[in-house]
Amino acid sequence: MFDPHRTAKQIREARMVIVGELYKRGFSFREIREEVIKRGDQDTYSLSTVKKDVDILLKEWRKTRIADVDQAIQLELESINTQIRECWYAWDRSKTDHKVKSKKQSGIAAKGSKSVAPDGSIADGDTKIQTTAIEQTEKDQMVFGDPRYQDLINKLGMERRKLLGLYAVDKSELTLKGSISPDKWLEENSEDE
Image (cartoon, rainbow, N blue to C red; front, side):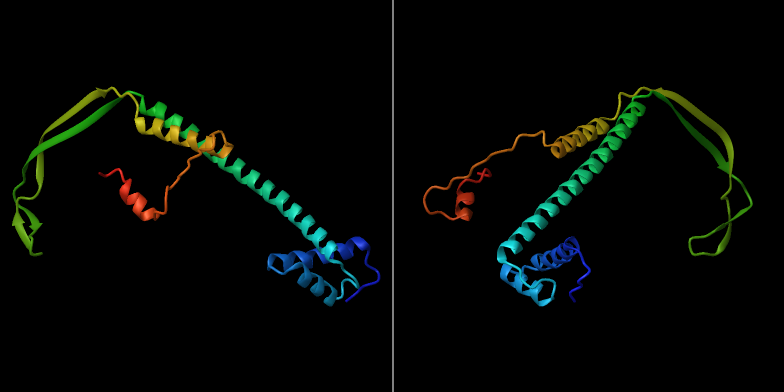
């Protein structure tokens, strides 16, 4: 397996792949050392080198994770900003006065038309309606905005502040005196009484 034409950097890269794979599976440093030597990539491989390799991998993984988290946070912030813009647009539209139109027709039944009876048979009946009057109404409706949009804007703002870490950490401490079970403590201190 050992290739004499490989550079030290290529050998180290191959070793790091093996170390990373084994470390993720939960192998101990000694087991990683034995496996790397067994695979023929190294003639000697000390435990201190294993530790250094694992530390390098952990550092790389942290950097990658931090970059991934930063990208995910940025994506969420952009999504929240888009939703907030849409909510503001909908809020402005909900404040716009508009006209409400309604149309009401009345009429009489026409003679000689056929209809379908409840049992499914065709029956003669008065089912057609001739329109005799049409009543149309139009009124101006004054609106003051739908408060649900403001509530949603507020909730989205809270989500944005949480993502940015602008809220202080809430510290709460629970102390139980004596030897009492949590269930009994909750029973004694419930607010339902």
